[in-house]
Image (cartoon, rainbow over all chains, first blue to last red; front, side, top):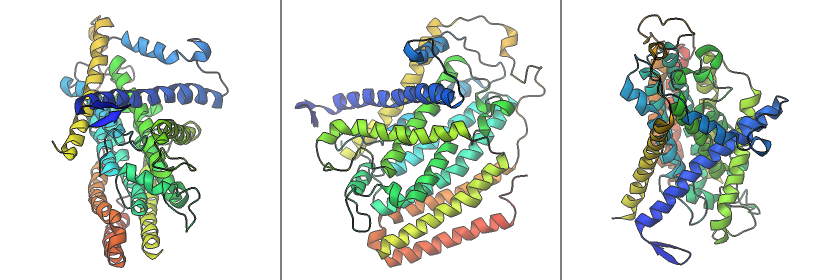
Length: 344
Length: 121
């Protein structure tokens, strides 16, 4: 039993409200990213205006696109494995919705307060690999199969730097709980100085860089977009998907980008907390979501900046980078962090 | 029901929400979208020419080896997390133990490296 605005709520009422907010927390950042980054920022970087017709400054373009997808015919290839083909988008979106659960947006504003927080997030984030394999296999298309195998090879190779980069944060915070990680950053000190707490981007910068690179690869975005390379694999595992089913994958991709940048904001930038206000202050229940969203936009700006400015890697370079550079670096980061934690 | 189980009930409900959302979108679009069946539409896309063979092509065996390597390191990660949360309590003992553990795994990675498994031809 908790109370919101002095109204007592039962578990079911409370969970209903949380699910509505969760729906918004998945769809709104995804929409914002597509409009602000994919439509506008990308266009400006390429010296063009982007969509300008639908609504003022093209701001209704997104609704127009969704309307277009609603009118598309549902084409499933004759040779496809139909049940698996239809199930794949569900699996991908389930992964995204379970991922958003761990994001805390204030001292009392959270979806669920899991003690295994970040570990749970890393675990459910790999469910989407199964969805991608299902999509690629069931399409009975050579491009799809190659694309999904490439995606799987990439996602599991970059899962490791992602997981190992987080370990540094866990060592410093001493907990897996996302909420406690925020508190640990708010109450932390950098070598005895606690003026701005200890946002782990300052003391775990290597971890932050590794995390961002790995997230970029997990999202199969350039420079790591070989699985969906348009010029060689005609969007890989998505080749045979069209209309609404394609839109589901698309929403899943951008919502996952939103959630991952939110997780990066919580782990490395202090989450909903800003310096200068006591971390247990009730104000953060109101202010927190806005602060978290601001930090999310900052992290996702970095992600999309890389996306729009780097050329694609080759498949062998990709695996080499993961296994020969990022994983040893992540292990070294863990070792240094652990030594400092015990010694200081 | 305990708080612990309740929080995982919420997890399950969010999973159901995702299934509901996708189902609702696809279901709604089936009310709006046209259906004009044509045999040619249902042929697999292969750059515009008629597809050759069955569609399930052979794939590079290297993906399998990387998956095996991944399993090794993923298990390692599972062991590192509990240690990382309790490092302060374990102190020097935990540090040395984990260094031995990571060292053995690094040997595995070095072995794979020397054998040329990490090279993608």
